[in-house]
Amino acid sequence: MMTILIATRNAHKTAEIRALLGPRRLCLTLNDFPAAPPVTEDAPTFAGNAAKKAFEIALWLANNWTLELDAGAFYVLADDSGLEVDALNGAPGVYSARYAALDSGQPGNSSDADNNAKLMRQLAGVAPDQRTARFRCALALAHPADKKLKLQNVRCFDGTCEGRIQSTASGQHGFGYDPLFVPAGFAQSFAELGSEVKDTISHRAGALAKLKAFLDSAKA
View 1 (cartoon, rainbow, N blue to C red):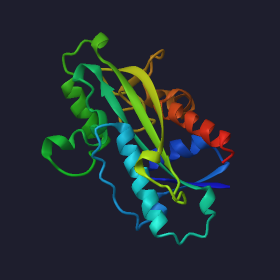
View 2: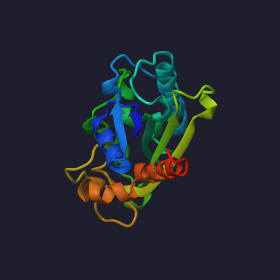
View 3: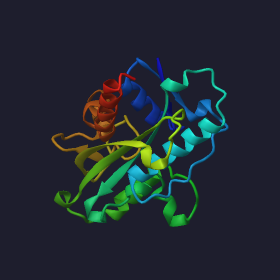
């Protein structure tokens, strides 16, 4: 069985990725590798951040390989994703997870509640038809056992989900901006639609479909 280290400690992301990849692949997380170094996500794009994270974790593994696993079937998968709002010139973008924290200069991510509250403040007075937005996801796949492991060799897969930002939060499912984001063609937020619908139309689902196609074509 292939083993994939999902380079995150985010339980919500992990659950989505595990569900979408299916049972044929063993998915670990950074919680299984407490000594893994932190990666500074300072690239200007989602793809840049995902590739950097996958590469640095894969390189660390390559230099500290003590796993009793098949190295040939072990991959590092990194995700960077976020929300782009047209009325805000694409913000919060790559700062989606720490959008509210930018105001205080505090390091680390903000709470979902704080990020959503800031987004609502920023969009106050913006007409409903001007609240177009999209979720973007970039996935990066690196192979620690690749003797030619380089940042530029990391494979990336992307996905996008178009929609709009509603004026009030609704729904109890999902995470992040899900209670505010209504995908195109629907009248309910991601948080109302739940995982059964979200996992078929989301940005992450689109990126993972491309990843799965690559893995299947490589007979991984």
